[in-house]
Length: 73
Ligand SMILES: [Zn+2]
Image (cartoon, rainbow, N blue to C red):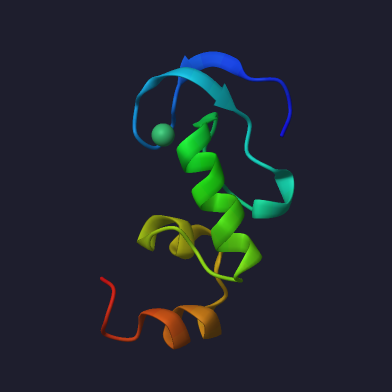
């Protein structure tokens, strides 16, 4: 994790210490509060996505079908 910025979180809107997303995460709007930063870090560690928007931006078509087929819309 790099130096925090004082900025609103791109996910939850909470203003406070926020961190730029890791480039390896793909297309992620930032900065993120520590809670949402952690959510992305854990999702990527498990080869998954934090929500539908994240999956839509970053998952392959095959992954989308495997992970979201009729369940998590
Ligand atoms: Zn947040």
